[in-house]
Length: 137
Image (cartoon, rainbow, N blue to C red; front, side, top):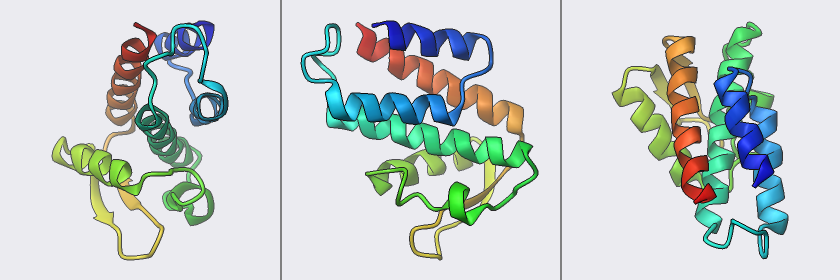
């Protein structure tokens, strides 16, 4: 699928954005049925791409100087269908010491500090690439 190849190329060039992934997730959510090469795609896969987009948005906001933009960078309810995936991924990032000061105490808001933006982004890119390659097969 050309979209997958385009996203992998954007990862290779270090320019993949949360918007790229959000658009891809929306495309998959609306029209993946019958798309050549995506017969094995599941709702779970779509939810993971939403989650990856959310986590990339967090590092983009940090680079723009917004540590906690609750309106667009902390509120997961409009961006992620499955909160458990976000919670799982943030726990994984915390275990790898890529984030700290994780807080879930405000309903619908995921707050955390990114400890090393470049390592965080590199880790997320690797997860996204692996998932893209998995669904491309």
